[in-house]
Length: 69
Image (cartoon, rainbow, N blue to C red; front, side):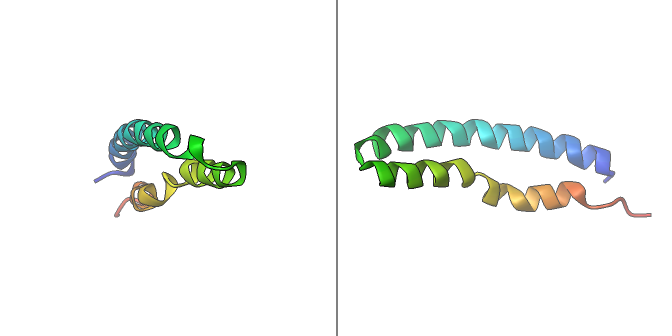
């Protein structure tokens, strides 16, 4: 598969994942984090803001693989 095709597929998958993750993060933040003390809220928002990167790292690596000769 060419890199250009992998990037197209990866971009579509990434946008779909982020769309679902945003909904999940909003539910968690509204339901759990708003009742917590301010320091816990800060840590929670930081973790929710960065947690989407970890599941997408393998996809990003796959998208960046060079084409086979």
